[in-house]
Image 1: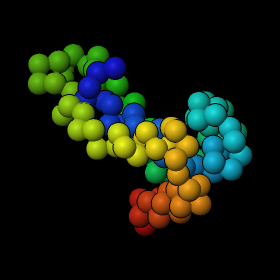
Image 2 (image 1 turned 45 degrees about the vertical axis):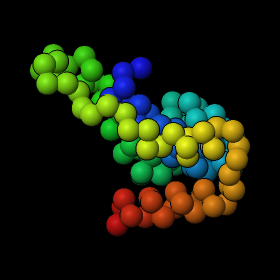
Image 3 (image 1 turned 30 degrees about the horizontal axis):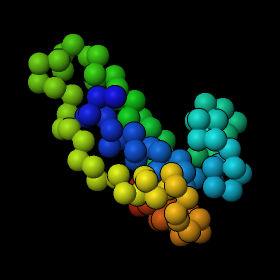
Length: 108
């Protein structure tokens, strides 16, 4: 994985872990993204972050960005949060509330 896309990947992973599709319905994050029936109910924030990640991945192979680079290297900003969600060290209600607030800020 190219270092410039790691932060975007972790943002997507965190958002998907907080989504009702994973948290309540207990689907795998991959299924929530790939299955059209499940992906239509994803929060707008998750969709925007997924688009940002995909744009970063496209930038890796974009020859016009080859000389100046794709973007800044990973800052590690989301590492702690990502690790807590991966190990199950979180309160599901609190995480759902965080996603609801972030999604409301994104849409509003």
